[in-house]
Image (cartoon, rainbow, N blue to C red):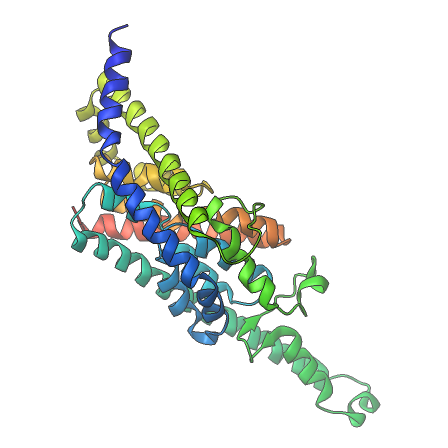
Length: 354
């Protein structure tokens, strides 16, 4: 019976000092997002082939607002698949606020964020390059089929018509968008053009971590900003407290050295497990991974693996807005693979930040 009060007190002591740091951080972030959110969405949409570069930079902004916006823009085919991956991979949700609250060395914070941004750019451009090659290959096959058709009267009236139609159906060079030929719900998406209202919508509600919530207008008052910051602070504080309570209980019962040794001696398990946790579409995933890393229970590889995958509510928005289930599952599995591979590379290279 004496153990429970001890656990509650220990978890409280580990958590309470974070609150003022979290509140100040979230107030600043809310002001930044409300001032620049809509402009950032327009910037991503207009980035064209540079989409992964811009997406990775914007995705590094704390919280998962840009991942939610990226999902909505991708569902409307306003950005490329590579840009979506770049945004997801550079998103770390609540990592930075927690680092700031724990007073982590700024150079360490910048190094980790820089790594995530760089990986986001690399994978984003690589994915877009692969998609381009597949699209061009498909166009060539279609061109060959058209030229080999045994109906010359169809080509004599307008010999370029079919070639242009195929190209436009598959690839839109004006916006550098790709349209696959999975005809599941294709008709309703292929020719959809994003309006300014749709473009601004992802940023008008992403603060609540719920894709269904909304704000009455695009210009939030200071009251809204303060309330949103307080909600984020309370949410993260509760999560940190619960994590601290569970960790203290486990360490008291099983022994801190035994748990740490297990995770260190089994880096593969830690890397894969961290990536699976990162897939949870909630800010709690990034909080858990970051806290375990700061407590020394996760190595660099496992931390990188989990935080690369941790796209927060962006995953929920993707499944809600993009009605191609198989494509969404592919993206999810792709994120998992990328996180595990890069985590393993960091582990094998012996890279350390703390």
